[in-house]
Amino acid sequence: MSGEGHMRSEDQKEVKSMKFPEGFFWGAATASYQIEGGIENNDWAEAGRNAKVPPAGIAADSWNRFREDFDLARNLHQNAHRFSLEWARIEPEEGKFDSNAIEHYREVIRELKKRGLEPFVTIWHFTLPLWFSHQGGFLNPKAPEIFSRYCKHIIRELSNEAHFWMTINEPEVYASNGYLRGTWPPFRHNPLALIRVTNVLVKSHILAYKKMKAANAGIFIGIAKNNMDIEANWNPFFKIVAKFMNWFWNERFLDNTKDALDFIGLNHYIHKKFGVSHKEEATDIGWPIFPKGIYNCLSKLKKYRKPIYITENGLADAKDIRRERYIKDYLRWVWWAIKEGADVRGYFYWSLIDNYEWAHGYAPRFGLVEVDYKTQKRTIRQSVIAYADTCKLNELKP
Ligand code: BGC
Image (tube, rainbow, N blue to C red; front, side, top):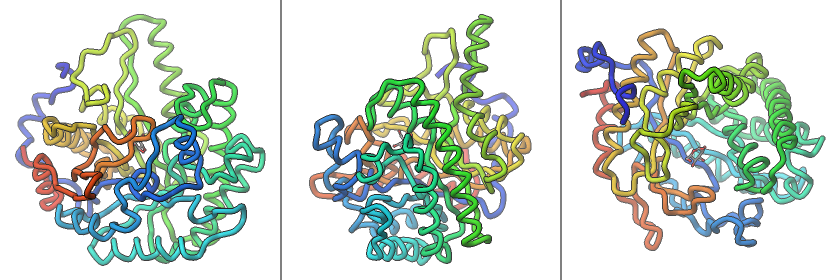
């Protein structure tokens, strides 16, 4: 780990009394396609059948085993949980909503609340129903209408069950992997399409927000935003690149939607310093470990004057040798950001259980809980005890 990523000296002094604000939400996050299993009618399942990405199959079978998963979260002293709804299950045909799927998710939310876990619901986490992807997905001019109709239906049916809702997970990650890098459906390499999709996602969120609030003014609506910590070395060219990237990747969506956001969800994983070759310790999938990055991101989000929930942060660590330190180091910087005025109200580790890591398949192990995919046996990882203590005490111990 680079020197910069370590604690400041004052931080070391304070380490014994790192209390978090009262009512802080502690939890972990998941997403439907990554854990539920048995989903065949979305764009990722189709790409799996065409051998363009690994098939997800029955995943961690959480469609059936969600109660067991929530017991684990409760046993780890969590008091909140972030999960997502599968659009293809709820609207399997255009405009036709499946009431069994809605009832399933109603049950999911109720089972969370029974265990004292506050539900944070993501309405759309990357996967599209086939009928929508076949109509061009978010390049379809009607996409904002189609997406907001789905969101409105959800709120009409389920908003009495939960208070916290996120429309979209990681707009720029979705758009860049699908339309520029071409590693995710629909596998395009087209910068113009990337820009168009990001614009349509802004419009889709704003329209969805209006319709959702009209259906239930009392709910709290946000976005799970993929912000990176971006900086540059001394080189003026790299400084300009970093400034542009910071605007495009971190700020553009928020600047355009800030009047339609009750809170910001921060998903943070990546630190990038232009002009400096990577020298930090890395996770199993090569992502740099740089705890101060989360502090930098939170500090920059202060200007939006919105409550912030860290809706994802975590690492792939199959051997479970870095997880405990990782969580503590990132949380220390979260604590510092709060101390310096960032209105952070919750932290969700990614992920509660091992799951389908998109184009990487099942090899990366992000879970607090290990899943044996042959038997579906869940085993709490050793490293996680310290995080469970933090959740229990609402305080970070050294
Ligand atoms: C996504 C998750 C993903 C995680 C780790 C985020 O980009 O929201 O779906 O599994 O990061 O890559």
